[in-house]
Image 1 (cartoon, helix red, strand yellow):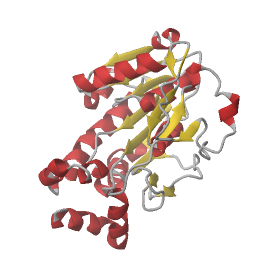
Image 2 (tube, helix red, strand yellow):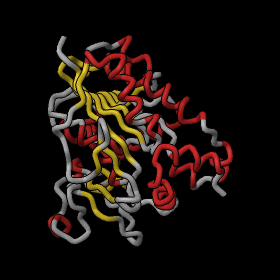
Image 3 (cartoon, rainbow, N blue to C red):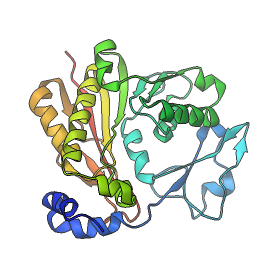
Length: 293
């Protein structure tokens, strides 16, 4: 049973949409199999097959009967992930030669996308504060990336909320896929749902805001930060950006020129919600460009 306080909290934010959204969150999530570009070119017989997903290059609708354990040149070929998770990493628009920071990188799917975009030049720092999750991240990157690419990746375990103090104005691109309420996960885990309290989202939003401020400090002038969550709480999404604009709006601007065919616009960013995209997400993201001094 879903606590009444849970329904009330999210109904106050989503109004009449909440009932359908809650039902959609209770349904099984969708996963895609994304081809690893470092494993070579997508095989021709698969490059034009009916399982490819529109707007998501190299992504196939997951066939539960397939193993996706194929390897080429010692590298894992397919990575399973929520198709909505690709969009924040793509919105960062990493260029070859960039210096990139993935602040909360585990389990590593988005880091793989960033590494591919760097191509033959550039450097990626993949950070994860949790020791166990950092080792999972290391395992994923080693399984999917060649030695040459791994030589340009630093895997770290720092508190990302302090990053900007130690490396200010350093990175061309920063992805902050922040720890969040993850309501889909909570709704499918009775023990987690039983522990849920209305204060959960507010406390997480405070942590996310600290991470956002740190990301903005660490970003080079003219560089880009993409902030994302898999929460449906407005406190953790647009409201965090509203607060950032109020306090630091003279240091950045929200970008609107990366609009994609996938997703719906929010006040400051974009979102994928499973009531409109069955099985996808939820996923929220916003791109910020740091102003030149």
